[in-house]
Amino acid sequence: MKILAEALILVFFSIFLGSEHRICHAFSSNYNARTKCLVEPKTAQDGGGIIANPDFTHGMEGWAVHGQGAMKEEMSRNGNRFIVAYNRTQSLDSISQKVQLGGGLIYSFSAWIQINKGSERVAVVFKIPHTELVIGGRVLARNGCWSLLKGGIFANFTSHADILFESNNTATEIWVDSVSLQPFTLEQWRAQQDEKIDKERKSKVRFKVTYGNGTAMDSATVSIKQTRSEFPFGCGMNFHIIDSTDYQNWFASRFKYTTFTNQMKWYSNEPKQGQENYTVADTMVKFAQKNGISIRGHNILWDDPKYQPEWVKNLTSDELRKAAAKRVDSVVSRYAGQLIAWDVINENLHFSFFEDKLGKNASSRYFKRAYELDPKTTMFLNEFNTIEYSNDEDVDPISYMKKLGAILSYPGNQGILAGIGLEGHFGVGQPNLAYMRSVLDILSSTGLPLWLTEVDVVKEPNQAEYLEQILREGYCHHAVKGIIMFAGPATAGFNATTLVDKDFKNTPSGDVVDKLIDEWRTKPTETKADGEGYFEMSLFLGDYNITIKNPVTNCSTTLSYRVTKGTTFIHIIA
Image (cartoon, rainbow, N blue to C red; front, top):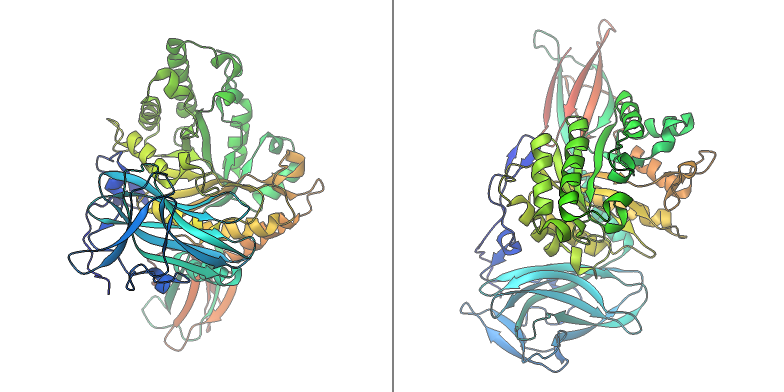
C-alpha cells in the first residue's frame, strides 16, 4: 500500500493580476525549483494499466534487467517498496518490462522516479522491434524525493515493446515506482478531450430575468447570440492579403487573431543595412485593426543563423550588438501597444546566433529591452519540437523551462509578462497525443500562459484528421490560452497545410477548421424563462448579445454580457 500523504518540497508560484500572469519572484533557472517532488510516490495511475506488478508489491516479479546492470528491491522507512537499477555501465542499463502494444492505440505512461545523488534527466524509452528507440518522456529526477515522469506513445502497429529507463550518467542509480501504461482507443481519447472542453471552455450559467422593479418576467422569450469567443483561435497571415479581396473576406469572416508569417521579421523590415521598410507590415496591421483582428508580433529577433538578414551574418560582435539593439528599439517601439504578444527571440533553444556572438545573456537582455519598450505586451519564448517530437532533448520541457527561467531571472526581468510559445509543426504520421498532453501538463506548472503559435501538419493523406486531433488536444488543455495555425489559402503560398484551394473552396483541412470554429461557439439559441424568470444554459466563454422579449408588450431589449470561467449567475433587468 502506497503512502498517499504528500510533502511538497518546492513549488513554482505566481501571482495573478486579472487575466494576466505576472512573474513576481526570482524565476530560478533550476528546473527542480518548479516541479513537484514528494517524500513518497503516489500509487500507479489507472492501477498501472497493462503493467504487471506496477507498485512492486510482489517484489521484482514481472521485471527484468536490461543491459549490463543489476536491480534490487528496496523499501522506504514508511514501508513503500520500489526497485533500484544499479551497477550501470550504459545509459540504457535499467529495469525493464516487456509489454504488448496494440496497433492504433494511444498509450499514456507515468512513473515515479528518484535517483541516489544529485539531479539527472531520466527518460522512459520504448524499444520496439525494427524501429528507432522512442523516448516516451523525461523528468529531472533528484535525490531525496520522488518526481513524476509523464509521457506516452502511439502504437502504429501491433508489436511487443520493452519499457526501459535511461540516464546518461551511468554512475546514477535509477529508483522506480508506481509505473503505469494505460491504452486508449482514439475514440476514448476524443471522449476525454470533449469532457475537458466542457469543463475548461464552457460555463453553466443560471439567468434571472426581471422587470426594473425586480418582479420576475414570467415566460419571457430570450434569444442568445455569441458575438466573440474568449478563446483566441486564429491563423497566420502573409502579404498576399493586401491585394486579394478573396483572401481578405475569407480571413475576416473566420478569424479574430493572427500572426504575420514573415512581415515583421528583421530580414523583411531591413533587407539592407540602414534601409528600414515597414510598408507591408503597416498595411497588414491596418487591415487587422480595421477588422478587429488581434496580432501576435513575430518576431523581434531569430536565433537561427540562416534567417538573419544577409548583411547581418558577417558583422563583428560590436557591429552586431549595435545593429540588434537598433532593431529591437525600432520594431518594438513602432508597434508598442498594438499587439497582444511578441515572440522575442525565436527558436533560441535550437539555435544561438546572438549568444555565440554577444554572450550567454544576449536573449535575456533583449527580453529586458522589449519589456521596457512595451511593458503591457506578453513576451514569448517560441520553439518547435517541444510538443511535436519526443526525441528532441534540446527543446523538451526540462530544457524549455531552464532556458525561460534563465531569461526571467536576469536582473530587471522579474516583472515581465511572459508566455510559452509552442510552434506545433507536425510531420508525417499519427501525432503522439499522449506525449503532447504530458508536455502541456509539465509546462503548465509554471503558471504561465501556453500558446500553440504556428500549428501545421505536413501534407499527407491523413492531414485533416491529424490536424483536428492536434487542435482539439490544444483547445481542451486548461493552460493553453490560444492557438494560431500557420495555414491558409493556396494562392497565398500555404503549401503545407492548405485550407482553401485557388478558388477559395475548402480543402479537407479547411473543412476541419470551419467545423471547429462552429463547434467551439454557442449556436444562436432561443428559450423561455420559467414562471419565476429563471433559465439555465451551458455557454462557451465569450461575449454575448442577449435579447429579451417582453411577453406583455412584445417589445424587445438587447443587452451585452461577457461569460467568463467564473460566471455562474446573470441577472437581466429588461
